[in-house]
Length: 176
Image (cartoon, rainbow, N blue to C red; front, side, top):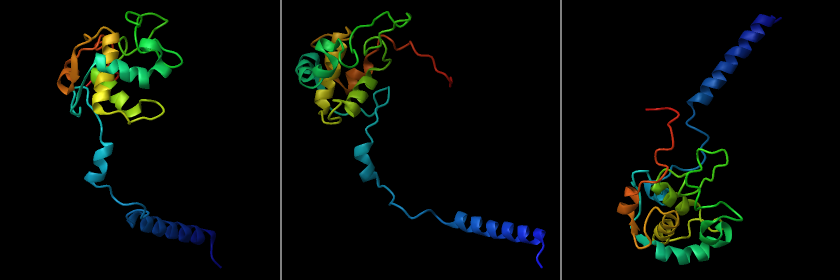
């Protein structure tokens, strides 16, 4: 008759062999590795220093008509908000309990505004705007927030040079 100790030892040994065989497998065999060519359309990251910004340009004047057609329904006249987020104003409110966080008062990097619009807007049809349209919309929002003049041309070079009003308003939680 087998003893309890023998059965436990046998089960542990068989389990160990089973686990070793699982670990030796390369994977479940699902999918295929992605190629650089397949990944390129998804790699639209833009760094805070402007790395990754696409070619193109736009002005606030050009951006106004795009804003009216694509953004007004959600963000209101000249970015005042309603029904969704307010995009303009809020300067000097971040040290108050009732903060107004907008493109001009809260966002620390100009390139992040471009990146966000490029990835997520318009809400109902994201990633449908051309790069020129996004430069123009970004310029329009910056103009409404008093960051640039109406006739300033926004492109990869000039966008990366813009210092946002709240650029120094964030503290790293984990300093380098």
